[in-house]
Length: 162
Ligand code: RB5
Image (cartoon, rainbow, N blue to C red; front, side, top):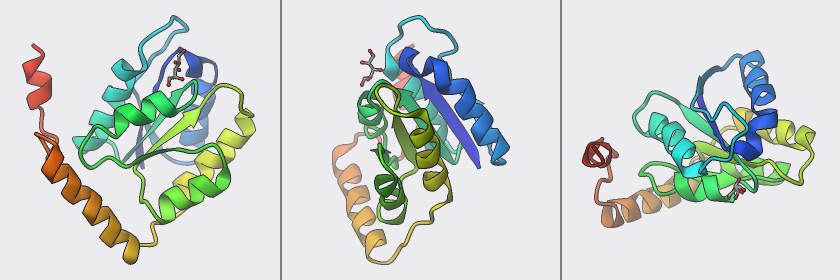
């Protein structure tokens, strides 16, 4: 798969290991930064990776920040994005089987990096169960169509900022 990866400073120390891990598992990585240890604002980088998924340049995204929470909040502001923060293997399994998440947010602080590697592996290799879960995701998509001004995720928001 093509995986967009974004991190803030909290993920800087392990981001390259995660990139190597993804590549060794056969994935293409779209590196959305940040590529230094300076303090940055996680939305600036999370947006890049999530937008790559919304625009079809990436199949999925992996987001790294101190807790995973800030990045996941950013991601779930975008139409068609289902992002989960996973800090254990059960969550990673269910986030794929039941929620068909296309974005994973990982916690970088106060967690064993080996657990994160296992979470990533489970999340990448576990299929969506479909069935009743498809119906539930359709209800979420319906909410997006009601609540998002730009439910198809085109680039209007980007051009407005110029
Ligand atoms: C940065 O200090 C920290 O707030 C950020 O990495 C993340 O945990 C936010 O949710």
